Each structure stands twice: as C-alpha cells, then as structure tokens.
Length: 223
Ligand SMILES: O=C(CO)[C@@H](O)[C@H](O)COP(=O)(O)O
Image (cartoon, rainbow, N blue to C red):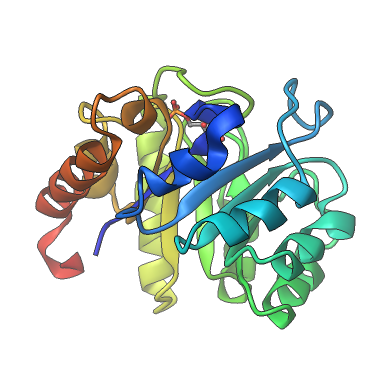
C-alpha cells in the first residue's frame, strides 16, 4: 500500500495548522527539522512539533537533518512524532539510537544522503521500521529528482526482501507526478512530496492522485 507524506517544508509556515489540515487525507505529515549545520538551512524544532501534534490527527513523520541526532531524536518521539528519522552520517550509535526511538513508542527510521551507500548498513536493517533514501541533497524543497538513485532504491528493496523484512522504504526529494512511478517500480512504498502537494491548487487532490499513481506502478506482489 503506497503512502503519501506531504512535506510541510513547502507549506506556509505562518499557517501550519491550516496547511496540515489541508492534507488531512495524507498518511503522514512529513516534518523537516534542519539545524543549519547538517544541512545549510534552518527550519523548526521541538516546540513546533509539539504544537503540530495538537493541530492535526495525521501522524507526524519527523525527518531530522541535524547534527547530534543521538542527543535529540528520542525527544521528538516524546514530543509526539509517530516516526523519527535520523541520518546515519550524523549518528554516533545508530543501533542504540533506533532502539531508543522505538522505546519511546515511535517508528525508527534511518536516512541516507545521495552519496551514502546502503551496503555497509545491511546488518542494521532489522533494527529499523523504515529506510529513507534521499533523492535530492537534503536541505531544500523544489529540487530536481536524482534518477541516479533508482538503482539504490532497487538494491535496498532486494536487501529487505532477502532478509524477509516488512519494513518501509521511503523516498524524499523531487517526488512528483512525473517521478513517483519510477520510485514505486523500484520498490519504494512511502513517498514524501513537498512542492508537488503544496504548490498544487488542490493539495488533498494531489495526495490522492500521487497515491493512485504509485499504487498502479508498484510491482504486483507489493499490492
Ligand atoms: O527533506 C527534504 C529536503 O531536504 C524534503 O522533504 C523536501 O521538502 C521535499 O520537497 P520536494 O522536493 O518534494 O519539493
């Protein structure tokens, strides 16, 4: 089942509650936390996540693009995020961190920048509920999809299947009506979309259309 997670990075930050409600049919709301160190951009932190939690029933998928995720990630789970993603490039102890996130009752996810290979982390996969393969350099919305990431998505899905893991495979960056089918064919099942949703005249309609496209393109055995 394909899941569509609109990224509020492309929303109007002065109207976050309304913007969250505009995509009430989404599976998760993707919340990009950036610290201007791990990536060259600064967005929001724990107080905003706490407030968003109260403003919407859609579960929050927090993507931490920050240094020292070992110190901060469990607090996002405590603040009400249903899923917390840390970057492996920034984590000091990814296994311990994934266990701490799960111990707080959230799903634990690990993200890879475009240049980070998946192979060294194969043994970590059972500790995770989701793997995020970035399909742009993290930091900004509205960038062009990197189709050179498609082989990595395919390899990741094969690896998960080989280990018999039910975990989710998320893609983030440049996901739109013209790229989502290639991601779904390659094995992704959770799709973050910022500009493709929030720049649309009808954000809720864009979520539904993207989901339908992804469902249609998914390999038959994944339906
Ligand atoms: O994490 C990021 C960017 O670093 C993303 O979540 C973007 O917000 C996706 O935006 P679009 O590429 O879909 O416009």
